[in-house]
Image (cartoon, rainbow, N blue to C red):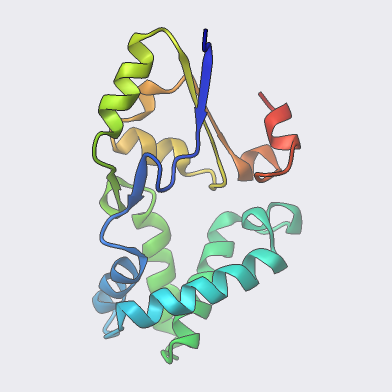
Length: 171
């Protein structure tokens, strides 16, 4: 009998509403920057890999906050896409950090709530283990999902990211 089921959350239970490039471009427009969502998507993929190699797990071992980590990533994503107004980009980055702490940047994947409810109704403990920063519980709560989970473990607070075995030892 299954007693515990753990899930990753991003693109399993929730996803970025409309896509990351769309969210970034929408935020940029508030600060007078007309950005191409597709360019931003391409740039983010490259910059994410570079930034995560330099400062793994949202910078936890580098002594930087996740807010600073994301601000730098967002700015570098825009800069590599040809947008250079660093003052405006700093505002965009802060806006996005706060935006993605709410339900406005995310959507629940179809049937996720039905599956979560079904698992809970069978008496199975349900948890999240995700490479995510400390905003995860707030995001899940704002989407009306937190109550489904017996625990939520994000990599930033655990100090280790998947697939490192140490994150699972935190259980």
